[in-house]
Length: 243
Image 1: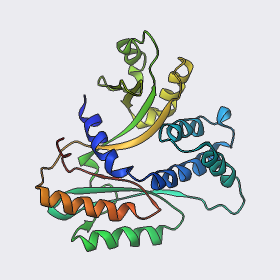
Image 2: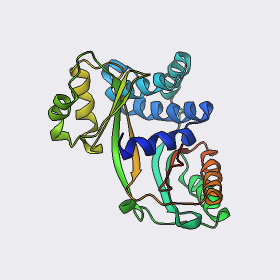
Image 3: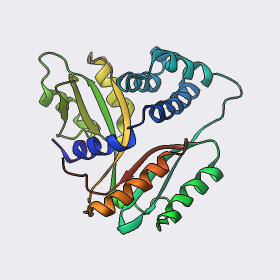
């Protein structure tokens, strides 16, 4: 399996270990998608993709419908995507992905955690060289699927040769250029793949070794950041713990 998959697998256990937090994160994504493209999934590819992710994360149907309905309210806040990056303890790079309706509050919350753990919050883009930004699509595998042929069909969208298969879930995960998100989604759906769920992620290109004690400290910092409702995901370049 690829480096991206192994990192995501390890990171997912940390980022999405709490179901309630997952639903909050997805609810905000639904709100943004509805405001941008309307409440009807059949006419809103982005919303359709997020709903597929919601189903994969076992978000109840009632929660999904409620999030769509709430997003149509006139008094709903407009969320803004903001990223914060810097170095935590032991020189580990930390990238914080947020959706917020109050950037002043969010940056103060994030900075407080960096300060508490003797880290340094840097300027936007300062850690870009340490992470690769990717779009990730997971979909149900079809009988007789030829992955080489599919990847060749998507070659113009900078799809990576490496892909990941989950036999238990019966799904395939591919990685590509974030700029081609909508085109990749359209191709997959038109090709008859079901439950096409797409997301964006940051994969470290230079993993940093840490001791068990250092890992414990970094994990505590990540958990503290994840406690804020504005925080969507937290990424680090800390090498995943071997199972």
